[in-house]
Image (cartoon, helix red, strand yellow):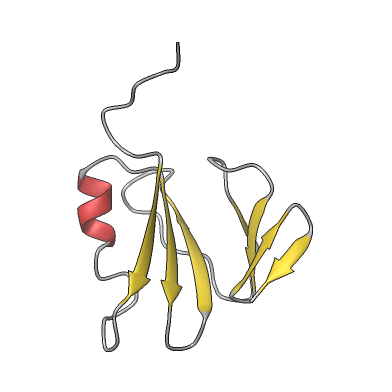
Amino acid sequence: MGTILATAAMAVELLSPGEAPGATLAFYRTHGVEEVLEVDVATLQARLLLRPDTTAEPAAPSEASASQVLPGLVILDGTVEIDGERYR
């Protein structure tokens, strides 16, 4: 039988038009979510927010962020890459 978690390991946040990036990060931190994949639907840009501690800041857009929850998921320059294949 699988493991039951008290919270999500990863949340996917689709930003509404006009919603500020990172606006809901405090909510996810409070609830113990390890990673947030944030997608701006207006620009089709994505960023992976990691949660090694509550003071961690998101990586700069030009830096690669690799998921620890979903092996093979990398965000680089706002583009999603899964197992070496880029999606935009």
